[in-house]
Image 1 (cartoon, rainbow, N blue to C red):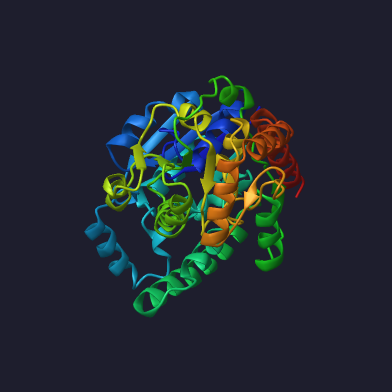
Image 2 (image 1 turned 120 degrees about the vertical axis):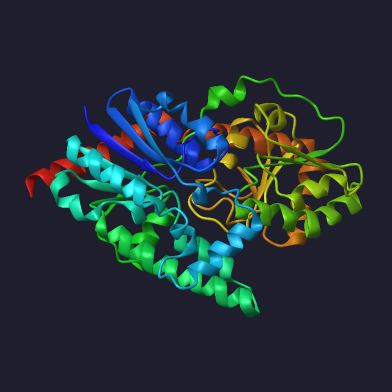
Amino acid sequence: MMRILWIKTSPLHPLTRGGDLRTFHLLRHLHSRHEVTFVGITADAGQVAGAKKAGEYSRDAVWVHEPQASLQLAKWKFLAGALVNLASSLPYAVARFRSTRLRQLLAAKLKEQCYDLVVADFLFPSASLPWEIKAESQCPWVLFQHNVESMIWRRRAEGKRGVQALYYKTQRDRMLRFENGASRRFDGVLAVSEEDARIFQTEMNLDNVLGVVPTGVDLDYFQSVPKTASAVPTVVFMGSMDWYANVDGVTWFVEVVWPLVQRQMPQAKFVVVGRKPPPEILAMATSGRNIEVTGTVPDVRPFLRGADVIVVPLRVGGGTRLKIYEAMAAEVPVVSTRIGAEGLNVLDGRHVLLADSAEDTASQVLKVLRSPVLAAELARNALEEVARPCSWAAAAEIFETACLGLRQKCSET
């Protein structure tokens, strides 16, 4: 049994974001075998409520409240913070989560309790870690990287012009410097895909990459809701709408792909399922283009099991997309960009259909909607494939084995 200090910049509930879902599934298995103390930040009323459910994945949970760490900042507050950040060496995506109170709390916890492992969940907590007492803690510190954050900012900077280009390129360069420097300070780094691990090892020249924790899926959970036939051809996007990449992807799909689909199939409906859609996404529901925006839903399975096709039109991102495995487990054909399917063991034309241009994406969506035989074949192949990857229990064991190996190595040096 290990005593694990797990650090994250938010609670896991509500379980609507991919990274939170991955951590939740891993932690609930680790929690059954180890003593997990969860330390994190709450930033708004929703997170305060979510923090009350931490007993599902930890023995103890301690929080500091930092309103500036909210993902739902008013636009003027976000812009004000970004302007203040211009004088900082930190990327804004990291600086907004930096907390003196979190660093002090962590220092106190590490001095009062001996831990066997310290885990920073995502890159962002590393700006608040008490690095000055790392040696005194006498245990390995591990960075669990769900994405290559600098890759996300590299992609966000592409195609920008003028002032936007200057801002995004500055943030990209700061993120690369910070991510590289912070990652080296940990005893070990765990990635979520072979591609991410390769970038850490070959492009950042990190020699502390421990391996890959694969993405899992709860097959029984998604199969437990019966499939339903939709009254009209139904295309669904599923994802938290308070994440830039999802907003960008849905906006692109609605503006340039959906008109091409409707030209050929005017009765088709597009449903956007995900928490906290911003005003520009909500406005799509009143545009007269057969678009529905649900906001937060209690259960995504009825939407998945009632869809004719799931689209993942992401143009920026990193790590792996849980939503694709979940759609595959629900036996729904998937049309995705290559970035959307990055890091997953899926084959174009067998498990999913991949397309990057507006014309190709619309063509693939229409192909599925027009051919029940193709749709059934893709769904069958996808279900067979998604049954092969690690369960979340097995993924947690891989995480645990890597950390135990690092702990043994550190104790011998």
